[in-house]
Image (cartoon, rainbow, N blue to C red; front, side, top):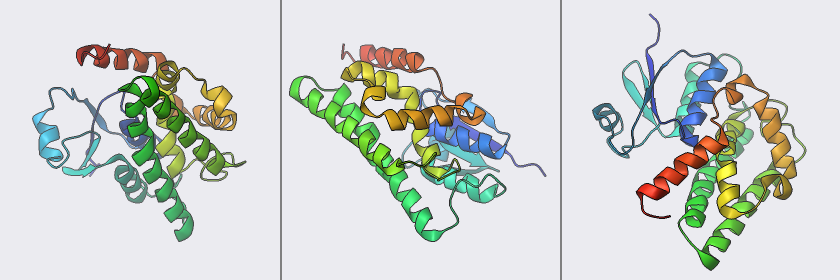
Amino acid sequence: MEDEVVLLDTWASMFGMRVRIALAEKGVKYEYKEEDLRNKSPLLLQMNPVHKKIPVLIHNGKPICESAIIVQYIDEVWNHNPSLMPSDPYQKAQARFWVDYIDKKVYDTWRKMWLSKGEEHEAGKNELISIFKLLEETLGDKPFYGGDTFGFVDVGLIPFYSWFYTYETFGNFKMEAECPSLMAWVKRCMQRETVSNTLPDGKKVYDFVLAIQKALGLE
């Protein structure tokens, strides 16, 4: 019997993009259900009653929540190549560490910059740039975070590229100038159809953020 796979998501979510990339890497067919986060569906509230957030992967009626956990689940259930997680326990622990770092730092720092002005805004911008510089340093001279192969950390970070234009515009900086090696990594990732077919245009994301800002009266 064929697996029934449903993804509850919203198009601009970098966390949902992770799941879509992982499913594409594994060639998994699934039903996509777009969620309106201002009017969450009964299915989303039922499947993720704790956090009430997307993304949620529903596999044969059973929900899996939190994007990093979902990507690991996909890698284990559809365990044919390409493998996203390294097999070495230490390398696997390191991969989990860096995705956890991305989860805890990038989005919250962006919000700090976005929702503030003056010195606080500038501090948020500088902190965001320093985070990306550290991630660039961690990449080193490897083609991908997984070494020669596209892997778990790459899946965890590349969706944020669709938000780079927004970060740059609100922060008045250029990622290419600040983190040239990271941008070279972005270009390598974007050569993969699983990535390029998933990530939305950066200017579309920027318009989406402006609409949120207007709705919240933050103009």
